Image (cartoon, rainbow, N blue to C red):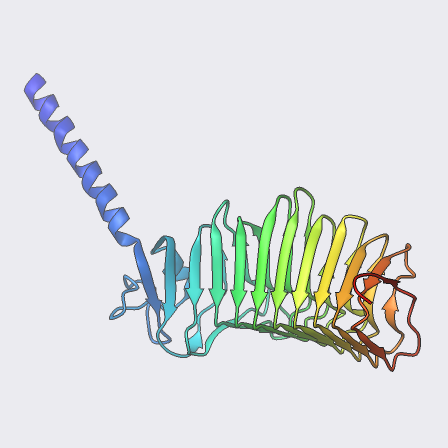
Length: 301
């Protein structure tokens, strides 16, 4: 009887090891999606999945999901470090409700590249970043959301990098960044916001830097910082045809250099709400606005 029990135990252990090995094997370092794929597939290049959500479950931590051909690949919630790369294809996400992508990746780092995310005038956020050490967004197009194009709202320190990206007709705002704990650090480069309530916003506990970016057609402000713990630095940016070009609220600090702030509807520079702070270098072009609050000059004259 003892030998029989030992044999049964040994068999059970072997089966457990085999099951674990099989589960590990199911997650590949690179998976693929195709418009003609199927989520029951292993997501290999020759047997791709159909959706990002289907491929996500079969992709190892720090792995990459790649796109084989143009298609709509569905909304996805990201809970681990991963890269999603649309490559040179039309890698689309239609999100007529909720968010196109939710990033809640623990301590992981997430990269999103070459994606088209369409809210169809009904979805809430293009990309919502609520968890994860860092989020990098490169060469993406986000449009037609009722809330934000990119909403980085955390309760701890985070890092957001956005480059070569267009955010269009996202009603509440283009990029919104804030955290209730730690510091949200934001780096924006060569990115455009159009047709939003505000283009770019630094909220509580945010260090926000934008370079060579533009905001236009935004009803409240092209660039806005709100609150004493919000700091925004603008370098070679454009704010034109907005309600206000650059707006500092409630003791927030905005510094601008080599920027074009022109043809805005109410003010070029606005710091009238809750005593904001705007500091400028002498190399800015601030013209064609009906009014503009005085800024504090700094740096070389």
